Amino acid sequence: MDTKCSGCYKITTVFSHAHTMVLCAGCSTVLCQPAEGKASLLEGYAFRQRQH
Image 1 (cartoon, rainbow, N blue to C red):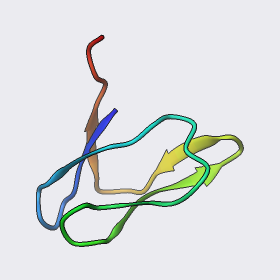
Image 2 (tube, helix red, strand yellow):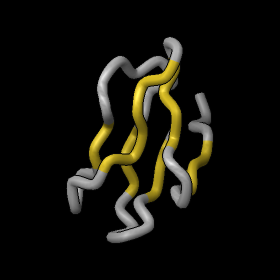
Image 3 (cartoon, rainbow, N blue to C red):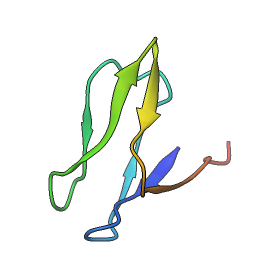
Image 4 (spheres, helix red, strand yellow):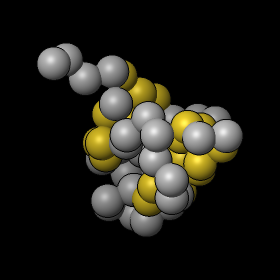
């Protein structure tokens, strides 16, 4: 899924089963953290699922 940072508005691709914290490509803030095998988005970030 594509995740938009609320600070710098850059879009970063996040995989649903990420095992590490995902940082914003622009400002290095944490976008999501691993939780029970799936990535958990933090509050305040917009996302959309990618089309295949």
